[in-house]
Image (cartoon, rainbow, N blue to C red; front, side, top):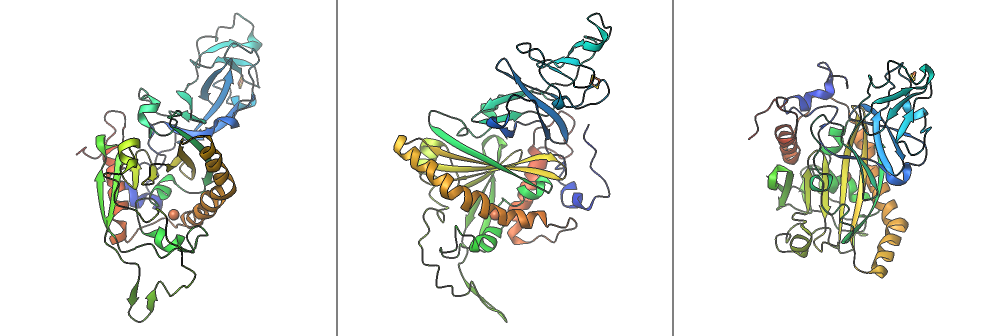
Length: 387
Ligand code: FES
Ligand SMILES: [Fe+2]
């Protein structure tokens, strides 16, 4: 079992009243690695504080508890000694487990009549391969249908293609998600990102209006009003006159129009940005031609895997070659690395403790409250009333 949240942990102060758990919400599908990373050898992963071994045999993908129940050695150091059987053998004394059920098939060093065989089982986890990613369900509830539970344009392969990458953050997953509900850091931090440095100042001092999405899957944070420059008494102007900001923003400033846009009518992207449970953000473009999903995957209380799942609408092979080349040569660096690294440095530097929240945190507060109230959990585990 993952360790319980520490009562004296200052990192818990902002979240305790909202009942958003340190280790993450367990009863959801999470992307854990890219499919290409799982080769012939078993692979160890960690999710919501659970150590899990992934392996593939005879075309079947399985996930078991990493720890051998015999004397605790890591199964990921073992191997599939009987190809085609869907089993994995522990490297220490050869206990051999069925991948799909977790049952001990044989204790090889005790002979075929070992009394322990079939009396022991290790935990097996629901696991799927979809859209170039391996997905795990670490919870105890009956798993939902994967494609119904994640944004549909991840892997609607006939209509979209996607390229995914991830970076591990040395921080709790909640700090990464708190970076997404329009807290106005983007207008400040990213104004000097290579991607935006020639564009005019993004509007700030916006009015934020968080609204639940259909079925309480998440929140849309609507934005309105705002300013692109102002005089601050005793200081001067923000932003300062920066002559190099001569570009016209292309699409990025468009936060309205989603009600009637192609993005909505054809592709179901209804808002410029949405936050979904268990902790992901969906950023769409009005044209519906591209969307970015960033997913905060809780590895454990101190580490978070930030997946960037880039999705493009298929518009012919020439356009696909262009989109892929543009991604690998430009966007993967300028956005998925440089832009995101600006966030990473700051999020990882956070000193946990009491916060003094303000007007720009309306979305952050709404998210915490929404997540604590509406996240799927086993019956009886909700501490907040479901509105
Ligand atoms: S520790 Fe795994 S077989 Fe002994
Ligand atoms: Fe950011």
